[in-house]
Image (cartoon, rainbow, N blue to C red; front, side):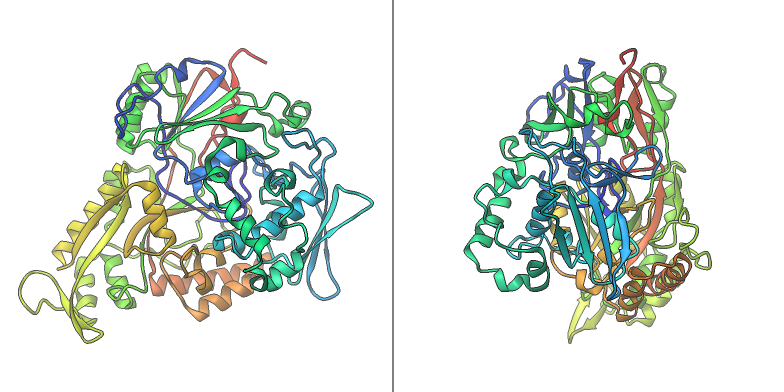
Length: 594
């Protein structure tokens, strides 16, 4: 439950080299792609590297699932894909925000009278209440989602007006509007037909949810919501958005079909971001980026993104491509990093982590892997955030000698002459042999891993590069069962709540603190920043936080990329955006057709 600009606006979302395709070549399971799809002008075919994890906004925080779900579900508010302004969607207008006498906040919304579910019934405040209750069901395994909504303390209905609602928050929160307005609303009639959550209230579930964990109705609802049908079967997935899930063939394609009576169509002429024009959105899976580019050349795709930098430069020189496709390189609000599991006995020491940072030749990666289509970063706040970005910090340079010095100071020696460093940890002689995990199919991440592996080898560190299918990789990240890994986070143009990634209480299986980084000083700074409404004062806190992260080095911060995007010229209204993934296929219009 993240606010997505027609993508994402409440939280930072993990992204993993997402790409997709449809092609007549054999896929990894021996099946065939769908070569005729992109020939149909009434639909948009988008490449994905891997299937989404699921299509349930109560549970998943995966980026490619999120991109798809925003065509199926809607929130009270979103970020307009083009203007980057916060705009009302299910809500008639932005909320009335007031401070409460006890130091908290309240936000009052009115739902649009036009808003309808797939069965034609109106979206009401009860549906919003239900979604919050469902999120905080204590038997539902969704700690990262619960974390994004933990500032809500209660919820108020108005019996005299079924479309009016108020969020109550016990404390101040600088992203309160994007937080309350940004999660996807789910229909109570559809997801709880048995009324299992009906007799629970928001306040009790948030404050004392564990007291209800063993209630039979709580368990029944959680089991149903986590069942295969609620995750992947179209008959059991439904929202207020313009599209339904028509079909899903694993490792091949996922098809969304536009509703015959989408309520937003009546508003699209005066509110452009409410529009939805293609009859179908087809997300077609090809498990490697090189084959996806070949599918584009064959005319089997309408959209491809995150193109390998070298391949993108070649596409720009290909007249057969430039005649049929617009090629874009918008800057993206995201950053890539190498994460280090701070609970691993090899990586507990700050000095060791900093040494590994000195072994990463980021400038070489940008030039040889990205062909200059990326910019060096220093930490988790991007330079585009001019108020919060700490200009006093500089990236760690590539300095193998400094790395060797730090490793030696930290006790790493090659005591047996085998070329691999070792030291005694927890009373046991331990060699510096470490796993470096990436998702398979990403040539870019593999190239980065190989560059790092070679420099580490020269310093006496053995790196085992482990490639895992994307969903397995994501699952291991969520379980925090990796040592070193490559990942990325998507940022928001309206501010970011860093607690979800960096707080100590998120360093648990299911939490988004994949590095298992814990520091009470960072926790205090982030807690203070979260409730600071003054932008200037909050910026000071965030700058101090960046200093601590720089000193503790839980990540090797690498770069923020430009997107490498190709969109068929048969579409208009298809301009790129800084919002990930850089395009919004539901807004595409067929050229020459009103």
